[in-house]
Structure formats: C-alpha cells, structure tokens
Amino acid sequence: MTQKQSPKQSTWLFGVHACLKALENPHREVHQCFVVPIVYEKHAAVLRTCSNITQVDKAFFHERFPTIVHQGIALEVAPLSAQTLHDLALQKQETAIVVVLDHITDPHNIGAVLRASAAFGVHAVITTERHAPQDEGTVAKVASGALDVVPFIKEVNLVRTLEDLKSQGFWIYGLDEQGEILSRRSDFSGKVAIVMGAEGKGLRRLTKEHCDHLIALPTAHTFTTLNVATATAVTLYEVYQQLYKRQDV
Image (cartoon, rainbow, N blue to C red; front, side, top):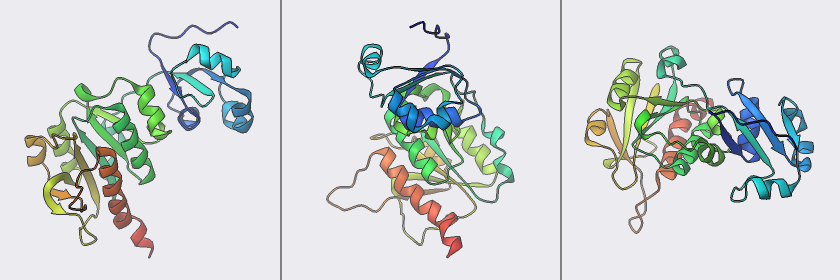
C-alpha cells in the first residue's frame, strides 16, 4: 500500500466521533483517513467527503497504531487555525457562555471540559498559549468531537483576556471553594464567563482578583472534591438551565 507522506505540521485524530466531527468542520484541513470497512459502511455519507481515504483491516491499525484506542478510524489533519476572542464577535450577543482555564494543562481534562462545553452551549473555551496542551490528538479523542465544535482559543495574557471579556459585557464567575455556594437562586444572566483553576492549586491570586463573583459547588461534607472537568460540567448545567432552558418554561 502506498501511503501519502505526512506533512510536517499534522496530527492524528482517532475515534469515530472525533474523526467525523473533524470531517464535518469546514475549517479543518484533512490530509488522509484510514478506516475499517464496517466503520466506513456505517458512516459513508460523511466519510465520502474525504478526498484521500483508504479502507484497511484491523491488522493495519494494530501494526500502525498499536497503543491507540482507535475504534477503527484514524484521521490525519492539520492543526486548527488559531482564533482570538474577537474573531467570535461575542459583543453582539445578548447571552453567551465562555469557559476560561487558568493553568489547566492536562489534555484529558481539557478534552472533557470541551465535551461538556459542547453539550451546554458554550461559545468558546479559552486558555493561555503557554499552558495549552501540545497533544491535540488526545484532546480531540477525549472531547469526542467537541474540539471541532467549540472554538478552543489560546490567548497570551489571561488577566487581559478577563478584562476584555468584561468590556464585552461578560460577568466573570470563578470557581473557588471559599466562594458563595451555587444554588438555584444564583443569578446567571446575560453573558457569563466561568473560570476554572487547576486541580489542587485552584485559581491564581491575580485571576481570582479579576473575577466579579466567586462560587463554590455544594457537595457532601464527607467528600468535597471534584476533578476540574466534572466541576465544569456541573456548573455549566446550571448556567445553561438559567440562560436557555428556563426561558422556555
């Protein structure tokens, strides 16, 4: 089998959801795709859009990607083009949600945050360039397609970004164990930015000082800790309910 030589700037995505969402993303440059016949038959409508696709057997994956959970599909892609907060034009929105990550670097956590963000209508997930994960493949696999749905923005200075969000009408809520306990009486309206700190360390001092409100999740006294992805999902559920779902009741 003659294989296309990999471009210098490329990454591999694995898993059905991650690969299909990448193919559906008009901003994603796709180099090549390997897929087993049963996966191709099930998702042919999307996979046919790939101009360089090769059907292979399971032995190919065991040899080429021996340590990867691939689900019978692999997609070689160019990294997504960098976006900035201003590219989204959120100042024109009446309601919006963004998630801001303060020194969270683990690609598994970031992938899970992106997945929760896609589920709850988040307009962007923002991190800093210095602490952005380099392993886009792992982020995409854990995100289960959300990396190609929710803009993942890398800014230079987090404090400046928070100030920029405020100038666009956002209220900044930082998750902190010393904050006000989140409840159904908590008021999330308009534009909301949820700031999450690294596990163990939490929000940095300067980040915390630039939040409008600090909130904490209600948990059982016998076990008070959640990982950052779970805490993000719980918080976003409540924000989403207030901003969107309850308006329909």
